[in-house]
Length: 85
Image 1: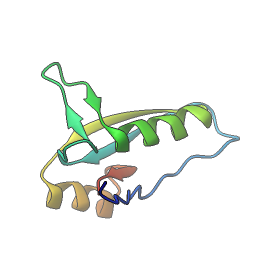
Image 2: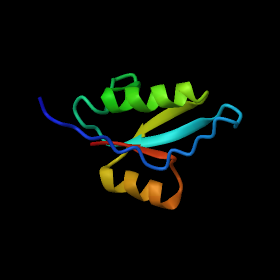
Image 3: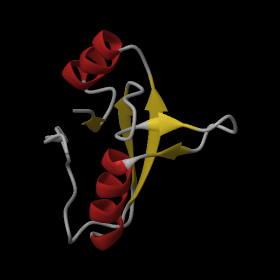
Image 4: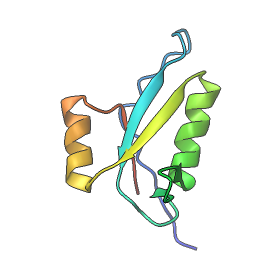
């Protein structure tokens, strides 16, 4: 079994804050982050990010982009987190 490490950057969630929706971006990686034909995200990385957000009382929205664009969005503050290996 492959050892997979997950990078979840810029997770800005406060337990005292009002419930918010945070934008996570990523690129399609098999079993980590994938997208169904209807646009719904799934995969282990998605599940982890979603569970963390849910436990903190927040939600996430995930959008798929080419990897360099996703990184740039994080750098510019246009996204709150990155899901990837």
